[in-house]
View 1 (cartoon, rainbow, N blue to C red):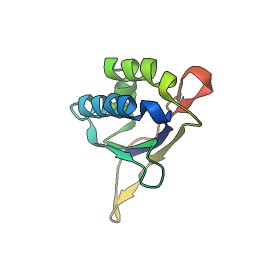
View 2: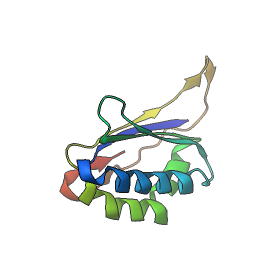
View 3: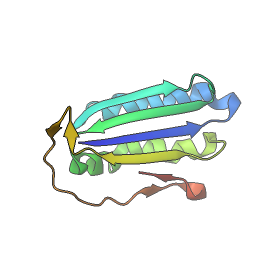
View 4: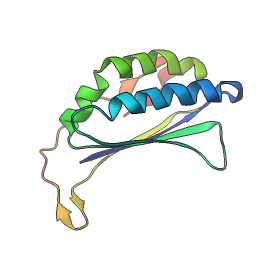
Length: 120
């Protein structure tokens, strides 16, 4: 299983627009094969930061996700709304509750947005 956590600091006056954009991405992503979970949160102590938490069954499923039209649309729109450094991390889960998760390890190239913003 693959987990991706990301946070996007959004321009204060663009938070509603960005939240709609991320929610649309999440809604479409949840319908993809291999998407186990795709959650969107507003950071409690800094409401202009939108956080995403994704769980994918495999690296192959995540790669297909990165190639989808809804990810392309998101990546085209989000740079104009960002104010600060985007944080992103990918975790390769090898066990859940002590039970091994079997998956062949494979590298995936991160996606680089305008302004050298990298999403894993």
